[in-house]
Image 1 (cartoon, rainbow, N blue to C red):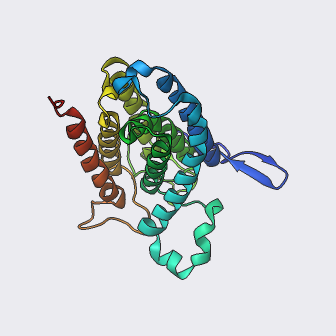
Image 2: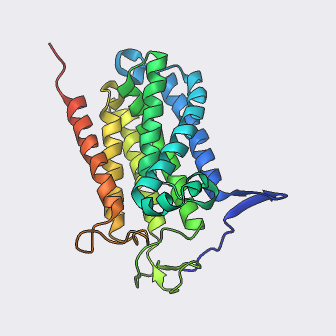
Length: 270
């Protein structure tokens, strides 16, 4: 399958270039906030008819979300993916324009931001986490598409008919478009599952359930795709040549998701 060869720079205003990757973050946050308002307005979806905060407040949270994602994503990348390099070059830690963000770190950052924001608003923190789980797939979908446009984080060589030769690949081999696998699993499929749970199965009435479904769905999708995706070159494979850092970092999310589902599914107290 031919690579579409889309310019990673969406548009430029003089010396200022706006990349698709940055737009994916921005549109993901704004699109997620817009979708969140539709859930927050339907009070009947939530336990005791009380969403974590009022719909208008989601636009205030969008600012908190950007800060949490950027700080968490960058710190996660520095700690988990290239710590030795940044210890030797500490000035590069703030060089976000050179790339280097960790989803797992960004997830921690936005979870902390949501917990603080919901507490400030006097809402149920677990319901706030459920709201994140319901809207998080939008950003995941757009982020993975941006990875594909950037021709980064591609997969292992394959002879499948939908294999892609990425222009950034020094070996120029047909490879799994693993970014698109993740976009479909973490973005589209998980969104559909959570949408059914929130709008048809009353999942938001059990605080923590939707967040748990998101955690399980994301972790399983990421671990599965890691079998087809090349590991980061500075890390490689771990422990015997098949385990990757992405798998390792997804395991706590899987465990936390299972714990949340069990907690939210417990019978109500008499």
